[in-house]
Amino acid sequence: MSEIPQLKDIRQVTDDPPPFLGRWPFVYAAVLCVLAAVIAGLYAFMRAFAA
Image 1: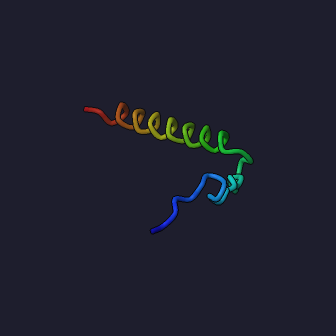
Image 2 (image 1 turned 30 degrees about the vertical axis):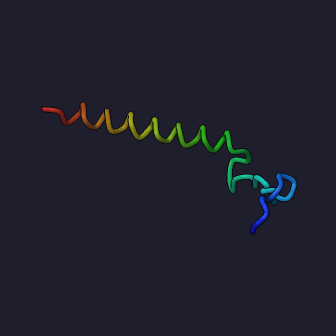
Image 3 (image 1 turned 45 degrees about the vertical axis):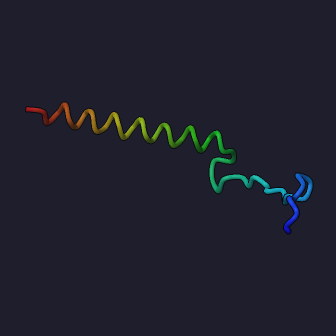
């Protein structure tokens, strides 16, 4: 029968920094800003070409 691994036996996973912007909160903020810009652009497109 297999033994249940103890918490200390579980390998630690390091949190590598993102490849750009230095920290994950900055990456999340950039993604939200891009999303807001896309939504605003599509809204403006819809308003400009609405019948």
